Length: 196
Image (cartoon, rainbow, N blue to C red; front, side, top):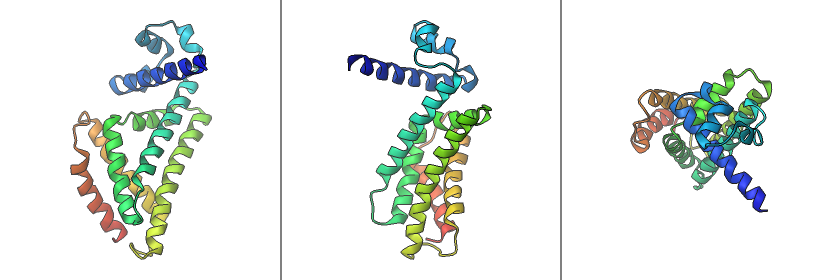
């Protein structure tokens, strides 16, 4: 039990270091050597946890999925699906700011990594997110809260696209933004589009 706990703590420490490397230098600098140097251990010790860059990216994607889905689930607290969409938008923007959107950087960098397994994991993560948003939109349509003629699928993609576009712009400005302030503006744009 103690060994498993130490391994879990060490893996989380490695994830945190990898996120730091990505946000400060870029995904291309995530190497076993760099991770070992930052932890202050040998490359051999890191290889006990990861056999390849695929293993590193896989762990990061799992971590992103777990934390992002938790954020989304916690934001869905109302019986009103439109309010839930609004909550998810703010929660995701806040998540992006807190994590300095290394999640987005990891996903974009990993998509360029020509590994079919990694690309599939990312695709599944995006699909899972889109299904959650789509489900909220379908509920809102059934309740007559938004336009009946919108495509829930395309509207879910547009929802994610708004977030990713604004995060990309912020990444060039060192994530200097206030989520609540931009949230109102983005929500108004999205709300108009779905016909609330």
